[in-house]
Image: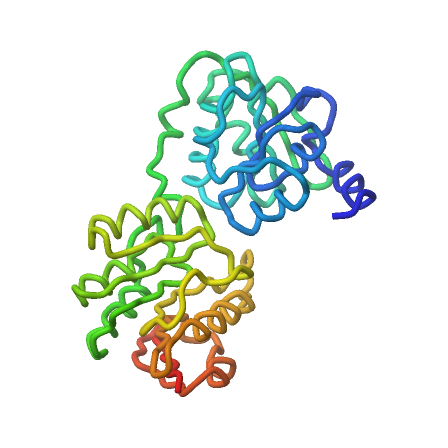
Length: 323
């Protein structure tokens, strides 16, 4: 972002309203506007956000647990109650007693409700609130108590499907029964690691490489694969714009994201499919699960021999065979 664009964005950001933040270094998640202005550290669990923060000259780490002794922290709201609670607990633990905990977000993420909820959980009103450009912020004092019990959530619950095995992934796993033995599997956009773990159980001599953009999911998938197949999986924090850490695999499994907000957005899924196919050896396969109505076929047919493997009322499993 250019200097003028950054200044314009800052004018619209309610965290910069007087009284919300002190003029001191801050920790900030899911963004780096405050860190760029005040110094401190950006907490960027999503790999693309992390790379952007580093490119902007900010110090950045993937997890709140890597931050300690901060005098203030900004929690940028995101979708999902568990995800926000996880961020609140991490920020609370990163800030010293007497410091500030700031929450901020656009109105469609419910900042007013979160402000009321946090005030009740802390039994203390906000120090200051601000409204600007359809967004809202509030600052709270961090006292010497532990984070509220309501914020102590299992990190897996912040992931897609709450970290559980979703119906589409279950269909893809069932489809593996008709495949010959695979020696090396790539799980791209691995999430909680269900697909790779099932493949490793299916083929006891196989190894798996998992790549995932969300650092929280990387930790969950690492634990799951260690339990399912000790020593046979490696999990990498990765963005689709980066080179893959592996090549010449027998099988790629993928349950790609298909939304940007409430709308369907297949661009990332298409890019993931292209990258996935580039990692296959000749004769290798991509197995992908998608919502039944989504039009993946035209693009996938350009990548290799396409066929539909399974289908029900909601999902379909597609295969691309590379020659």
